[in-house]
Image 1: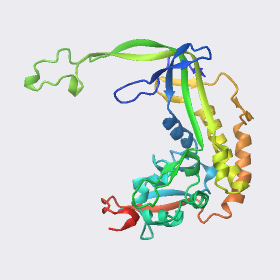
Image 2 (image 1 turned 180 degrees about the vertical axis):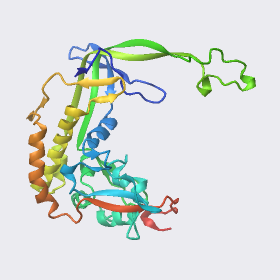
Image 3 (image 1 turned 120 degrees about the horizontal axis):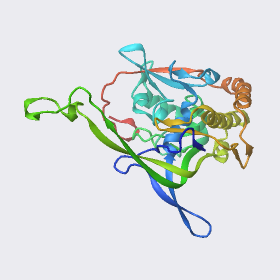
Image 4 (image 1 turned 135 degrees about the vertical axis):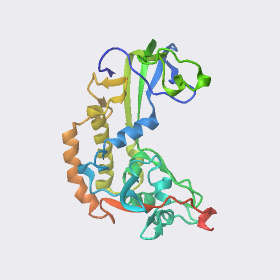
Amino acid sequence: MRPAFGSTFQPTGFPDIGASTFDTFADDGSTTPSLLVESVQSMANRLEATAWDYGGQQPVDLIADLPYIRVHRASAPEEFLTSSRLEAHRIASAFVREATLDGTKMLDLIASRLGLENDKPLNFPAMADALMGLDPFVLLHGTFFNNKAWWGQPRFTRAVSAVIEAHDVRRAVSGGRKSDSVRHALGDQSEGAGGTSEGYGSVPFHRVEWTAREIHAMFAIDTALLRSYGLGEPRTELLTTLALWEIRSFLDSGLRLRTACDLEPVAKPTGNAGDLPERDELTARIAELLPQVTADLPTHGALTVLWNGEKPKKKTAGGAQ
């Protein structure tokens, strides 16, 4: 990949440390200064976002029949709040687990669907089958059922991962000036004249961007993990094809990562399974697989739950109050 214009780009930043820099090692032991452009966590969100219509606050039309949990406010049942496709922990999100469906707490409904009980081993194939009926994207992007009321606290790891790294990097230091053409002198702050903290005055600033000899976007789909769930061929192929569709959609239209980070591909995406199919081809295959998969699912489309915003009562393991 390369910057879409100019030579510099702005990488992701982290609290307290800024950009993540590191050395990569060649076979001969030599090192190259490198940089994390986009983290695995961020890329999971960006890939999942390719299947969400933010303008309509709903999934894209292609996958409208696949189940997902849609959260509305209890005080305004028609008001969209969030969904399992937007939350960091997906269906394990506090907004989902503390919501209700027809009066039943989602915390309890999810535990029942997953078969979580004390003195009972976790059955990942059975849980994966249940998650297909709640939100199949959980199986692609992972979740952690970390509430004490969920016996065993099962964790589903990501089946699709991605990262963007830059190699042989150099800093590009520049700066600027926030100009105030009206207030030429800040005056005595004790008199309440208003200073830079209130947005007045001219303020110089510096910024650090980066250049790189190479920028690589890397993707991995754990097909062995998906097969281990024993979901059957149509479901497993659908999940794999959805992962490929997300990757292709991201590469085709999702490479404006930040204000100062527009990238573009300079090589044909390929891997150990061959060239990445075009989006139209993947879209057509998903459309063929969907009727076979959704026919056996208990829910089609949105499962709307109501969140009232109340602080939940403390529970012990297993749900006892």
